[in-house]
Amino acid sequence: TGDAAILDRGPFDFVLLQDVLEHVEDGRVLLGEMDGHLKPGGHILVGTPNAANLNLSRPEYFWNEVHAPYHLHIYTRESVEDMGRALGWAPVDFFDRPYHDRPVFGLNARASREYQHLIDGTMDGVLEPVRLGKALTSPKFLFYAAFGYWLSFRSDMTVIFQKGV
Image: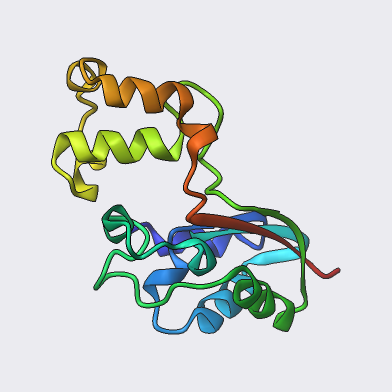
């Protein structure tokens, strides 16, 4: 939740829409609203779970990617790109992982998932103050902190669009 009045300062050169699209009734409507806040030639990053890479036999997908009943839709790359193209946006880049999944110690999706599991098994744990002592005494967390980027489930995606001029 944020201050909607900040949108009055636009249009913007860059809009970040991370982990939002899957929560709304109609993604086309939301992207259409964002189009009005994006300058011609501007970029929008859309990050969301990737339906094409979800293995529903793995229970850990139900914590974040499926996240029922909060995720109303799970999209494929093609469906997100089609929604953007319908607005005149050109897909300019694609990553088969979330934008925050980096090859830096502890800053990857597998380490985040393991930390979440250590704290309380819900997404709420990542919104609380970091419990570094608990994380650093977990061999499994330390393993994923070091190597998790290369062991990614690739269950999320990031599509970057550029709005037509």
